[in-house]
Structures are given as structure tokens and as C-alpha cells.
Image (tube, helix red, strand yellow):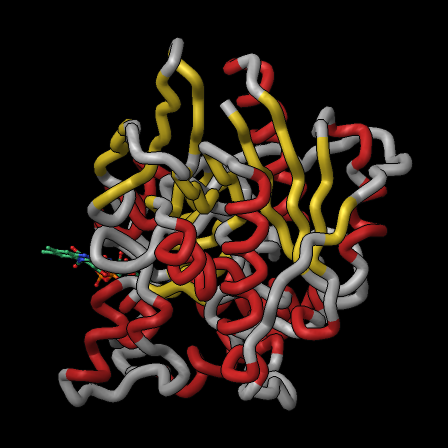
Length: 340
Ligand SMILES: Cc1cc2nc3c(=O)[nH]c(=O)nc-3n(C[C@H](O)[C@H](O)[C@H](O)COP(=O)(O)OP(=O)(O)OC[C@H]3O[C@@H](n4cnc5c(N)ncnc54)[C@H](O)[C@@H]3O)c2cc1C
């Protein structure tokens, strides 16, 4: 089996962490299948990036480092990826599911006559067969499958393999010739716009996820609502801890039902069965009771803590490692003061 580990470089040079993770999986698959491994790298500094992973056991290193691929652009990335897939003669192409590749590899698959699968979390050889795994239905069903079509492109999710570590050296990479057409070059990337770091809802590399539940918007012990205060406490914490914000469904639904709620909360923040399933190292849930956020929403969070007024909150008790029975308003005010 010919395996191609296909990567792109990142701004500032080198390979992204997600690429090194895929390299670990590709090198393991090469051992399992007794096949051959080639590494293909697209982008500026591709040859230097190849040298950095020279010790990975690849028999060959192919690069496309023309100025045309210095910036991510669908047309040129697609042409470059298709050229590398064809030139390598790969049966199996393993690539990281980065935004750049998620955009261009389906097009490259079409041009190379390949099949492509995304969000793969595991690849293993079983005799002649390669079995991939991915989750369906909001991470509730894990499916193992294989394909007979070749080439087969596998886009792997980040965080499921350890990043490859090994010796750098001289990869003797070979630059592949790609004919970029005028049409490929007609789009110019003039810059990127992204929200400020504290405005992002999803920050997968941050260690702590903060989850807010509808309790923040309920009448409190003085019989009054304290929604504005809740907003200040939560945003203050997010800023100080640079934590991303998750929410229960009840809390995000309040807005669409016209009730006063936290203005910065949207459905993008929802965790759970019908929300996202984040994978941060730690999670802190506050004022949150629901089954879905606790049992499904953050089941991949390694260390889970909850703050709830209710000592009998079954889901917090059953699913969190530590439950603080207390008033989240008081607890978070204290935490924020400590973080200051
Ligand atoms: C098909 C289906 C899919 C669903 N999918 C999802 C999903 O994806 N995600 C999701 O979240 N929900 C989902 N739900 C809804 C879910 O069942 C719950 O209704 C919801 O999660 C409850 O939200 P909550 O815990 O924030 O609010 P509540 O149940 O109202 O809980 C509020 C909690 O806040 C506590 N509290 C109040 N004040 C304080 C305070 N001062 N300090 C500390 N604690 C306090 C209370 O003790 C209480 O435990 C789904 C439901 C269905 C039927």
C-alpha cells in the first residue's frame, strides 16, 4: 500500500500540530500494512518543513512551494494537492482536517478520481483492509468502515493522535511541477478577518471550557433576576481565563423565545446532544442541570467540575468529578477576584 501523508505549512513556517498528529498515524499505518510512506507538503517553506520530519520513515518527500501556494486559496491549493496525489500514486492519502484542507481537498479528490472522508478519528489496518472510524449523530454513534476505492483520502480530526516527534535531517525533497492556470490565479487573498480572541466561541486549544446554564437567568435568593450581573461575571471570567463559552440549550433558547437573557450567547455556544461536543482538558459548568449538556455535551472533557445551588442535581452529581454546592454568583465573583 502506498500512503501519502499530505500537509500544508503554516504561517510563520513549519507544519501545524494537526499535521504532525497525522504523521504519527500515517507512520503507524505504514508499519501495520508493510507499505510505503511518502510525504507531500504544500506551501511556503515546504522543503524546510520536510527536513524537519526527515526521520519519519518516508521513502520520498514531494513539495509544492511555488509563490502561488504561499497563501491558502481554493484554486491553487486544489491544483497542488491533486498534483501531489497523482504524482505519488498513493492508494491512501492521510491529511489533517484543517480549514485549508477541508476547503480544497474535496475538489482535489474529484480531480484525482479519489474518494474522501472527513472527521476521521482512527485508522487501522486489518490484514489487507484499512478501517477508519468516525462519529455520527453528534458523537453518539461511532462507525468503523473501509473502502475499496483508491485513492482514498482521509481527513483526520485534530487531537486524536499524539504529534509526531523524531529526528530532523535532510529530506532531499523534490519539487513537483504544477501548472497553475490563469483562472487558478485570478483570486487574490488580500488578508484575513477574524473575531478578537475573546469573542471566539470555539477555542479548542484552550485548557478550560466554561459552561453556563439557564440558572443564571432565574430568580435568585432575593427573589429578583440578576441577568446583567450574570453577564458581567461570565464575561469577566472568560476574559481573565481566556476560556471559551459553552451553554445549555435552555439558556440559548431563551433569546429566541423573546426573554431577557445574556446578549452575547448564541446557538453557536450550545453544547450537548443538539449542540457541540467539545474536547477541552477541563470544564467548569455553572447553573446547569440538564442531562444533555452533562451526559453528552462534555463527555470528552477530561476533568469536569460543576457549581450548582442544588445538592441533588443528579446530572451534575453523576457526571462531574467535583460538584461545588454553592451560589455561582458568589463563587464566580470570588474566582474573578482571585484571577485579578
Ligand atoms: C431532543 C432534545 C435535545 C436536547 N439537546 C440539548 C442539548 O444539546 N444541549 C442542552 O443543553 N440541552 C438539550 N436539551 C434540553 C435539556 O434536556 C435541558 O432542558 C437543558 O439542558 C436544561 O438547561 P439548564 O440545565 O441550563 O437549565 P435548568 O434545567 O433550568 O437548570 C438550571 C440550574 O441552575 C441552578 N442554579 C440556579 N441558580 C443558581 C445559582 N445562583 N448558582 C448555582 N446554580 C444555580 C439550578 O439549581 C438548576 O440546577 C435537549 C432536550 C431534548 C428534548
